Length: 111
Image 1 (tube, rainbow, N blue to C red):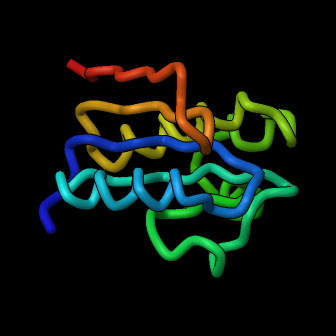
Image 2: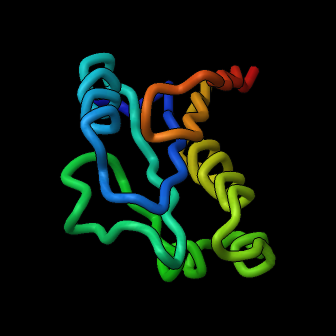
């Protein structure tokens, strides 16, 4: 697979749902990446068979000082996902904040 240009950043503290699995499948179909930003009470890597999961411990090993400064159990950890996506070369980032059907979506072109 070529380097993804579109990356979806998903924050969650729950196990993957059918909606998340459908999102992952749709992203795979267009060769996009899925970054899952977990939290202390979030899912484990074995629960996600798709995307790339960043739990708290993995986040704290990232080369971003922000990782240790963000509060745990807080939506703001999603900012790490945006930094990871940019570091991986994403040109467009899709932010998904809910694991059910979403009412809000943010698409941020990085140009």
